[in-house]
Image (cartoon, rainbow, N blue to C red; front, side, top):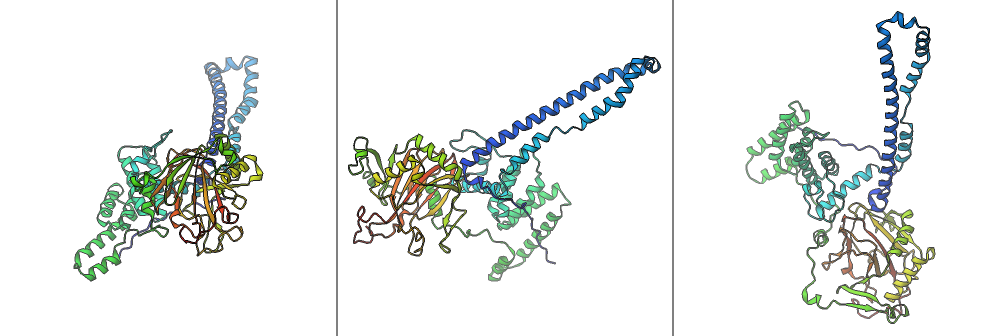
Length: 534
């Protein structure tokens, strides 16, 4: 008899139009004010209900005293003409008024406000996106579930913790993605917190149901069997667990009967699920990328470090910087990455952010197959584009970039402002178009992206570095600074060592803005060389 495992089905409610709150911390702050407004409205409703109950209570106490007196001598009481009149009046009109008071719905204002605000609420995709962000942060920064659950993250100002129910929900999100590794981790954390006596709306049976199946899917049949038996101790009638128990026992009995041979291996392959393989979107340099995000694996040697300097830069005798030269620091040698300090003021940053906030939309990437812009899971942020003619500050920033780099910004793309969301990131990518993407910037008519200028418009409490996996470089955000590098050699060939990434933001709010400068207009500003890699 062949036993079939019963698979746990999870269906998420159909989402409405997606606001994408989880992709921008800046826009998520609006939700804080929304929730504060709802709490105020809720307190007003509670006060109205309390006032209503207080009126009813006073009326009941008054009638309690009156009826207590009247029932002692009913004839004598109603024999008084005033009492007789008031009794008729109370029963004919006042009890009707009390009935109307009791039936009066005091929640209209609160429900109306809630209905209006609900259209701006996050939806299922936001909740799942935020959950996936926690899983991403867990992997990138080597965090265990207990550390995250207790809120012990570096640089936090407002410590928070996860309940067993929260951990259970994270496990369920992983489960729907067939990510049984994280399902196991978070279901175990939920179970551990329940074992410690935490009061929760979820029970151990539900947790063990998911946990045993996740463990089974990763090939640990012995542990899956133990967990299933533990579940049945709590709920002997659990239909799925009873079916799974018989199935596990059947598989284990079959494994004991076969010899350790090639046929045995094939039999195991057919009956025992494999551990989850490499994800479809797994990047070859992921390990290096994640190490650099943690500040590990940086390949700068002391000998090379000695050749990196700080200097004052006057923009090749530019009049604007002769008396007040820019502070310049070498961050890396090959590719050459330069940081400019105190290059954008706090006031300018706030103006740029205020201009960008109303326009922020989910950041997109070029699809190499279609040549069109599309959203991608490996880029979690929102961005907006600002033109120089819109505001003098934007125009002044553009000219500053031109003066300091010596490159013409008239052919550059507009200033892109980006705000990263929960665990916001942009996985390893090139800024320039490769040879297999000849039409990437064809519509602009300005050639390839010759260089990148990146402003850091906020400090980040933890995470959020810009890393270059090919060369082992990490550049950390510092408010008011900017970094600059060339994407192309002077020959026009792409510099593949500039492949870079924005690490997930662990704690904090990351704002950046960047300017992509193009080849056209630079013919005499950065002449071509005969060597392909120079």
